[in-house]
Length: 419
Image (cartoon, rainbow, N blue to C red; front, side):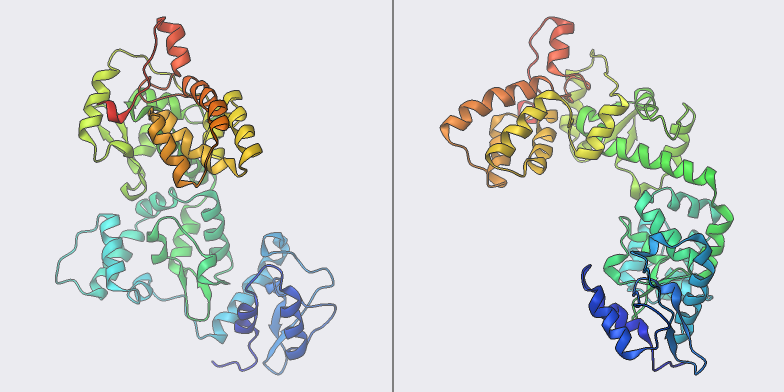
């Protein structure tokens, strides 16, 4: 079906920046019938067909600022809008998933099969690879595991597209960390994002509060393993990691939840390895020498299990934002150079790894930050204070200051270069 008076492409071509709404609206006024008020190019639910079969803009005097603000009562109209667009573009979302997957490049299909652990043969063509990927994804247990890897923002995007059976969106507006999701969320040449109907049906069968809580638990565990395990521990016994993950108050994570979730998280989303009763961060994936050395150096040390508020600060800001010594450094840097946040995140990682001043100087150099002799004289004591109050791998999550108080001894900061 061909519709000559189609607002879809013109809307998308004009909707290139956040502040050109008037340009889009003027275009609508010039080319399409408007029922009342000023047209709103973001209120897609009010695009319908006129009696002559052409598109008609049912506008609003109080346009919505974004599709996120559309009331539940409008959902039905949104579905009708989606149906109109699908008909206008000749889009059929009812075909089996593999019929869409097969249109992707073969290199991408091979990457997906590797990520999902699907066995392939060198003789497999695109059609065979697409069928194997579909068979894997459409297995409810496998699909649920994929959903666990979606962040809150990605989950919202997925559910929005699924609920409306597609939305007008450009490729840059559809973003997933794991590329596997581009084998179930597609964007056609007319910039229309959609999810095949059989995938939407499967999701509707498994979705619910239980799945969303499990996904939130998985996201917390993945964030802790990425940011906290790699930063403050490097590796730790599984039982200690279970305690670390259970610091989360909402959603509640029981002792039995952690091993179960670790088991079902797809390997492509994991930033850790399970080895010798330990959970090992990615920092040691290709560094057997330092992994063994760290084991020897802290064999008799106890672990500090970081509290939830500390974890949240590192996940949110990239470093312990409210800690007084970091606040002092932040204020000092902002006063002299500005834009301290990114710099402090990089410095915090190196403080936690116990890197020396030479490595810190390299960070300043890479960021294009230079200090006068007077500034260096002020900065060095601040850095020393931070090093003594930063949780480190060498000290199993304790700060040197805490270890000194416990052991009545001076703690030498851990450094990869010292191994």
